[in-house]
Length: 285
Image 1 (cartoon, rainbow, N blue to C red):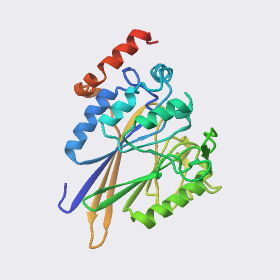
Image 2 (image 1 turned 135 degrees about the horizontal axis):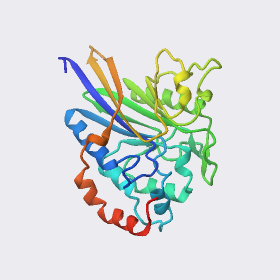
Image 3 (image 1 turned 90 degrees about the vertical axis):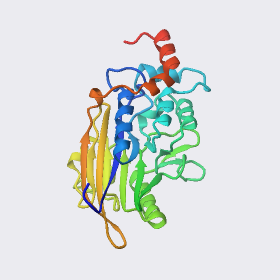
Image 4 (image 1 turned 120 degrees about the vertical axis):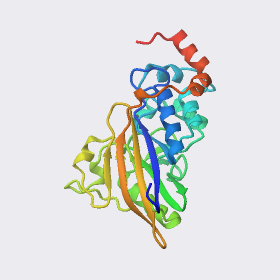
């Protein structure tokens, strides 16, 4: 790294679909090895965007268990020290109780600026952004979910554009971040003008599971499309310190092939009995 330059790494998993042990779509044991190696190289912010709780036989199996049973995927993510996850519509598909159990067991925040408490009209889970600071550089991460994804009990989903504008302004007023990343699920039209120009100011990079983001234009926001299949994205941001601020000198975005990495033995040992019980009770398709 050149003198006076600082690198920050953002690793994002996407569309895990509740896979915990199976090796066909995504092997989280190998992902864990990659994450640990990346942390040896510099400061890493670890995020999840897109469907992560549901979409597999394993997630359906654990959703059917008693409410006090731990969810191995959340155990994995806790051990890997995830900094935050976005919430997608699919994460509610096995029911609000399963989602709530996952949320209660997590040691990292679930972020959404537009899933609200029906009574207070405030974000239901917590402040919908996090700030990660490294050597004086403040990275903001904010998340928004699909409009209308949930209308159950105390939960209410608000319009995406109004919510993201409100909370981006709040974040800048309170935190003064140097760089802001938005985690996004759902269609892009509600965030754009009629000519597909993004309307949200103050966001430097948006990670989206919507294929329409290829067609979105914005002078100040870099759009990154995340595919439907499980993936691991590694972003490297390079900053240079100025007198009273930090200047972004460059960004590098690449998808990671984790298949060539060894599986993390410590993670396997921690989940040995859960994996054994699942394989004993459910025959993989």
